[in-house]
Every structure is written in structure tokens, then in C-alpha cells.
Length: 402
Image 1 (tube, rainbow, N blue to C red):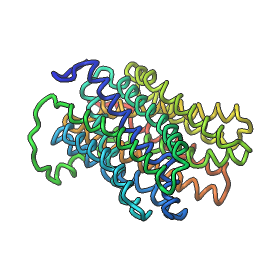
Image 2: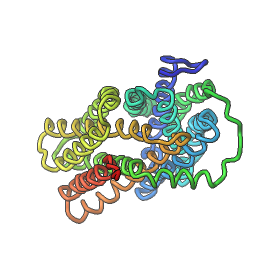
Image 3: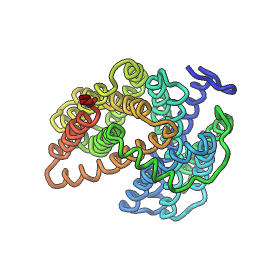
Image 4: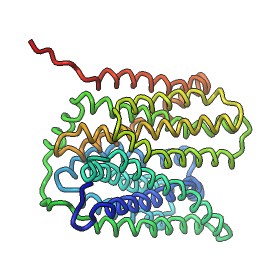
């Protein structure tokens, strides 16, 4: 295990886990469940609410890759501090608006925080813990998932606690809590020290072009990124339409929330274990297995008919996500060229966000035209297609020597 003079060994692990927990807690409590309620209270209609929800992932698509490239040239610390400033300042902007349309640029701005944090922290972990990066990436992801799980509970509690107060006060209190949770994020990013000093310099456009070409011309890197795209295509479809299937089966909102909570706990509990496995076996096998688990279980959703079966299916979906995503990040780290770790992690994150955004849209069109069976089957079709492409792309080709 590598170390630094300021945050050596295990202390670095705790540092990263605390950073991920508070950052994701802060950004999640800002949107779930408060964002649609706050938007509606400001006078937004359904179309505007949908647009507000969509702009945050767009920031990840646009910025994750450039951020990764910049961090390769200017160091991780500067980018972490910028993300910390965004995490802290964005919740304060919700306190001063009264027009719902202002939520669109605010959500985009807020989305840049996670667009920066994700690839930069992944690059730090891959570089500082090369021997057990899969396990460390899994543990970091679990820390963020704990924050993601607790945030809606705390947000709902705060709204309920202040529900008797007039107007927008209950929602604004939630954003004050989000800002308070982001304060440790900024402090932790200021504490981070680079292993070596990186001078501040202009990053030429040629560096972005070179990193882009390097990533997408390498068949193994490209294929692994497509696996994450397929994974989050299925997950985006799942989280959008699974509740509607449950409602059609007469399952109430409380139990729907419980199913999602159990799934999140499954992912959080298993990612460190699957990360440890990824450090010891052929990651390609784990990636394909996870994606196929996810595709098959997603396609099975319309055929479930009881809460117990839905619980089983939801848990297998979580296992598939956990199996695949922890191995893809570790495999990308194995493949990344020297000096390209941030760019590679950023490209992976951007392509993942594309899948996450496309899943609900494509599945929604299919569901509207052909029903839930065809809609969820599209995730299985995408998963199988990408698995075949991945297997062909990452196989070790024999060199013919005469």
C-alpha cells in the first residue's frame, strides 16, 4: 500500500471515504426528495421538473473527461478543491431563487461537483493503491452509497419536521443542511496533498485531443467503457420504471422505498468483497458475469408477481451492478497508460452518464409503444450485445511469429 507524507496508508483510506460520504450525502439530499417538491412549490410544471432533473447528469457527460485530462496535467488537488467549492456554494444558491427556471443552471452547476469528484478520486485510488485498487474502489463506492442512502431519509425527515412552517421554508432548510454537509468536503479537499508538486500551467487543446484518441483507439478501454454504459442504461431504466411496475401490482410507496433501500444496501455491502475478488481473478470474467446478471434480472421484472419475487429481482440487479462496476473501474486502471489515469477515469464516467441518461428515454419510448416486457427486455438486449462486443475486444490476440 502506497502512502504520502501527510496522509499515509490507512489514514488516506479514511480520508477518501469521509470525502465521498459527505460529498454524495450533500448532493443527494439536494435532490431527493426535495428537488421535485421545491420545483413544484416554485410553480414549475411537469415538463420543467423533468428538465431540471435531467441537467445534472448532463454535467457529468460534458465535464468528466476534460476534468480527468486536466487532473493528469495540473494534479488532483486543484480539481478536488474546485469540486469542494462547488459542493459548498451550490446549495446556497437554492436559498435565493423564486423562479423555477433558475433551478436549471443551478442543477447543472451542482452537477459539475460530482463530475469532477468521481474521476479524480478514482484516479487517486488507482494510483495510490495499485495492488488492491479493486478493493479500495469498492470500499470508496460503499462509503458514497451510505451517504446516498441516508440523504433521502434525512431530507424527508427535515421536510416533515418543518412542514408547519409557511411557504418554501421546509425546502430551504434542507438546502442549509446540504451546505453544512458540504463544509467537511471543502475542508478535506484543502487537506489533500499531492505526492509531488505539480506546477500550474496552461493545458493545451492538443492534450485533450491526444487523451481522447488514446482512450478510444484502445479496443480494451473502449469496450470496458461500453460495459459501464450498458450497465447504467439498465439501471436508469430500472430506477425509472420499476416503481411504476410495482404500483401496477398494488405495492405501496413505503414498500417501494424499502425495495430500493435494500438494493442500495446490497450494492454497498458487496462492492468491497467483489472489489477484493477483482484484484485476484481475471476482471474480464467478473465484468461479463455482472452485466449478464443485471440484464437477465432487469428483463425478469415484468414477470414478477409478489413482493418477495420483486425483492429477489431487485437484489440480483444490485448484485449485477456491484459485480460489474467495481471490476470495470479496476480494469480501466490496469489498462490506462502512464499519465492518462485521470483521462481514462473521466472518459469512463462520461460514457457511464450517457448510458444512465439514455436508458430511461429509450425504455420509455419502447414501453409507450409495446409495454413493460419489451421495455425491460431492451436492457437485456443491450447487455448481451455489449457483452459479445466486450469479449471480442478484450481477448488476448496471439501474435503470429514466423
